[in-house]
Amino acid sequence: MSQVKLKGIDKVFGNTQVLDGVEIDIADGEFMVFVGPSGCGKTTLMRTIAGLERPSAGHVLIDEADVTRAHPAHRGVAMVFQSYALYPHMTVFENIAFGLRLSKKSRSDVDAAVRDVASILQIEPLLERKPSALSGGQRQRVAIGRAIVRDPKVFLFDEPLSNLDAALRVQMRVELIKLHQRLKATMIYVTHDQTEAMTMADRIVVLNGGRVEQLGTPLELYGRPVNRFVAGFIGSPKMNFLEVSASRVDDGGVTVTLPGDVELTVPVDGEGVEVGSALTFGVRPEHVGIRDGVDGPADVRLSAQVDLVEHLGSEILVHAKLFDDYQIEIKSTGHDSVTHDDRLEVAIRTRLCHLFGDDGRALSPLADESTPVTA
Image (cartoon, rainbow, N blue to C red; front, side):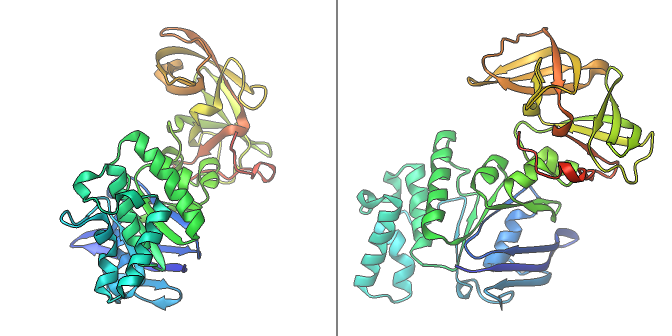
């Protein structure tokens, strides 16, 4: 187990800046997830930690040792790739043992280490099979076992579940969480799937255009996103956004006018906001109520017409239209009876809402509203 520190990491390919001044401290034993859209630099950042890419500027430290120019084999890291990269002519046992044999371990040590890892991953009955006789999930376990057996300082996972079907992804996600709890190892995990990030991480790094947009716990990113990008990326379905303007600014917050000339005061710090300032109002689909407010009585109610209803079993996702053709999504219980063309009364609580300035940055909550919103 080890600390990993990234200090001012830049990476330039030709004229393209892929990483821009990345600063991240990863604690000993932490499960850190890098998340962001395609092309945001998350895989390049992981490859830089592994030593497969050399940064254009900055330093990579593992256990306070500067490994920026160290060979990948000398960094004490093990990487699990998106592709399983198993040797097809070798058995599971031989695939897991390969690295140990290259390091001249004794036969008894290799056998004991492989069987211990197989026990952890529950693949003992598969040791004599070849990869062609394994399912996708079993192959991924073997790839993870090959990393574990090396007893690295840091585990690196580059979208390891993306080739699996939906049900198996959920199963493997749970198994990786349990593995981290058992090994108490430092793990860095790359994914484009924000659901994976939210469910697995101790902390999440949201990357965009090679820059760190926000670093925090899943609940911090969900409840108090620092800007519109993070607010729209974290959460499924994504946050509803409405373009509004400030109609009043006082000690109680910033008042905006929603479609239908409905005023709503959001308890945020209005410093720098003037009457008439262009703002973006945000509220998550799960924080919009049908008839009744979420987490208490509604502060405002809006009239909406249903365009589409997605039935998800225990939940429904309602796509509706407000005044002036504003679109809004509502996530509600599957027991609600809603159909196409219904007229709804949409209920909103101000404490569950967000405001973003014209630069995309979130307006800070007032002192008594600083606790991350999780309702």
